[in-house]
Each structure stands twice: as C-alpha cells, then as structure tokens.
Length: 261
Image (tube, rainbow, N blue to C red; front, side, top):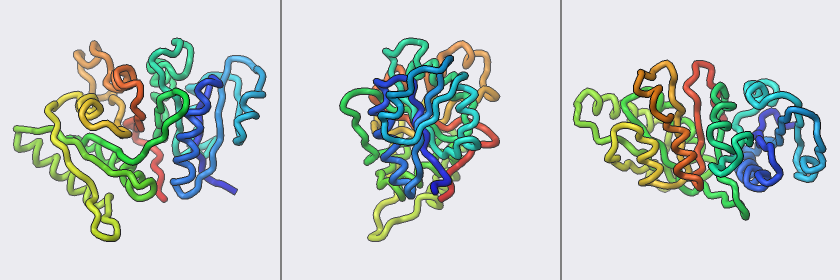
C-alpha cells in the first residue's frame, strides 16, 4: 500500500500523455511512490477518458485551488505534475496565468511540464539559481533528490555580485549545497557552478543560458515593492517565454512540505 503519491493534475485529455509520462518517471525514481490522476471540473462529466489512463484517479466537482490546497493531506501528495502551454485557452489549467493562480497556495513542489506529442521526459540535467537569499535552501533539497534518485547533473547558477556582503552570503548558501549534495562513489563532481550575467530575475537568465529542468521559487508577495507589483511575475514569464522548459516550482511558505526520503 503506497503512502505517498505523485499527483498528475489533468483537466484536458490532450494534456494527459505528457503529464502522466513525467509523473510516472518521478514516481518510479522517488523510491517507487504511488501515482494518482486528479481532475477537477465545475460539474460532473464523463470520466471514461480518465479510466482509460490506466492509473488510479479522482474526479472532483469544485475548483482547482481548493483541491490543490489538499494535495499533501487528502491525497498524501509529495509532488504535483501539471501541464503548461502558453497557447492553451485561459480557462484551461495549462494556461500559465491560470496554472499559477490555482497553485499559488500549494504546499508541495509542483512540476510544470510542456505538453506535446510525443512527450519528452528528460531529467539528465537540472539547474537552480542560488543567490544571497535563504530561500535557495529549499531548492537545494530538491536538487539533492534529483541528483541522488534521478541521476541529474546539477548546475547551480549564481549572480556575479560585486558587493562583498552579498558574495559572503552566497558563499554560505554554497556551503549548504556541499552538505545536501553528497559525492557519489568514484568521486563524481557534486555540481557545477555557472556565473550569470544578471543579478535580478535570475531564473529567467538561467532558463535562457542553461537549459534542462529548472528548479525555481515563485515570487514571495511579502517581499514585493511597488515596482514588483507593476511588473509581470518572473514565474509567469518563465512559462510564457520558455514553452518547452520543465519547471519545478516551490512556493515560499512557512508550511512547505518537503519530501524527506
């Protein structure tokens, strides 16, 4: 009996192949977790296409935001997988603005994967940005799972700070990386560090320069100033500008659930 699950969030049959392919890959590699497909609609419809997926599923009447809020408790979810497609209708879960609105209170990591046929699942490379801020430590924990369990080659992209205080705090975060990314047998390099030309909106810079699966934090509304409120959020620009990029998002929350296997 499985006690933890990767939850495949699907609201359209066309998105199912990509979402399920990524969900199966992670469920198998994360120490054989269970998998469940989740569909949420405004009214009860035909669930025949869900049955045809060949995995356990839940079809709920309601709204996605409420269902996603219950992922770690009601569904024992440790990771959600959802589709992202900038060309999707605004009402579809895959539309970047709709997806991010529904997941903004999510308490587990959520992997946004590009739709398309055939689905391409590639976790051989993963990248995260590390700055002077403490929020990078949650990203490093997930990077350690990708490194140890999925065999990903990890790149840590860092801003080229000129301020000595910021550089010192960045070095503290890199020392934490040494702790959570243990060496493999044979002395394999834990990770590589790549310098970014940008010092702001660094996730966008890393997506353009590095490629591979990106681990990113969403914007913390508690730290936004007036200018930030006027500009599009970085996470929405990521999904809009890089439609073929898989992005593993973490929300800045005090009650974030982290896989601890």
